Image 1 (cartoon, rainbow, N blue to C red):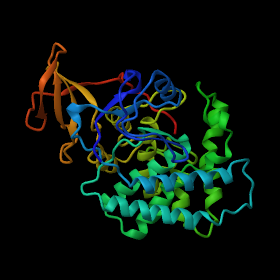
Image 2: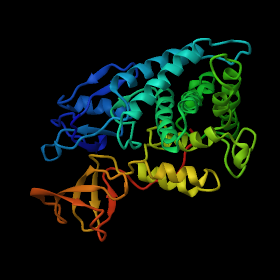
Image 3: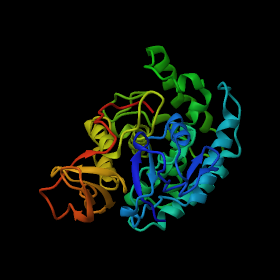
Length: 372
């Protein structure tokens, strides 16, 4: 699919045309490509917490933005997650079983594995653009996709990939038993509230551990994804290899997706900012070798993003190089004085070592980490 230019919703102007469909949480298209944006539509996008959208720009109309999975796979996955999770919403009660979980989510995980396997040189791309999905549903899907890709790169066989994908898809299932007003609180949590949030790991494990279609290795992902290498995590303060290997992957993808998603209490970070935060916990919170695999396969500057170079020139990311993702190709659109170029040109930063990206349009530098 051919897309265009990624800009902050705060920079949208009436008359711009949308470059990529916008979906609601039911997978229904709210706005199609080439829809003209009005003041009312822009206000609605802001209201729903979108930080970035793709818009049409003739200067970048040849930029191809690959999706990590097929639209139909994504739509079906979100519908299944939403339907299943809604059935579970409410107080945690012992003895309740969810016999549909194993088959439903195993099928979804296998579809995602097939989609990712068909993508040559697949990389972790921003998934939280042009979507108004409920956070928990979208987060569960995103973490599953990111984690399966890392598992494929690591070399897990199909059986282990399925177990890993199931664990990732269901890692936050315990949150279905927590009050929405707590999960969506816009201000800082009290100590008592944070302790209540932390219960989702134990609750999730209790929900999954006795389900016949959910292997115990997958259930432990719900239990252990907030454990940290140095023992500083929860719920049991496990250290190093005491933590499930699958949960150590999910710890990284869970934190990354939480940081790159708009939340009621803070805007989304961009990938390079989230990666910087993750690296502050390298070897302490997150396993160094796994974090390095993640770093080498994440598109830290999204395609279509407007950036400023140290030369003062401004342009758009038009190509990401898997071997050096932090040195993309930039289409320069304006000179150091801000004047638009009549003939934009491409600069491959792999071969222009004196040039670096100094600013990404629409984002202030953030170094905080959120609890997912």
